Length: 74
Image (cartoon, rainbow, N blue to C red; front, side):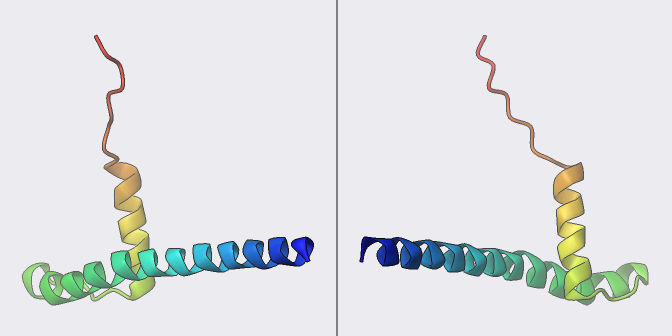
């Protein structure tokens, strides 16, 4: 029975991780998409974007404008 409990616990952990990834993607993607589609077409005459484009834009901006941390203590 211990083997079955370990398998069930592993499957539960995997499903929880997948659910968390989906939730983070929704939390990051939709607000950016809504703000972009509300402001950018009227202000700068840019096209509206989809959810996946907003998620990609968010990822790209995170890569390009990564916060730096200084762990060196002088």
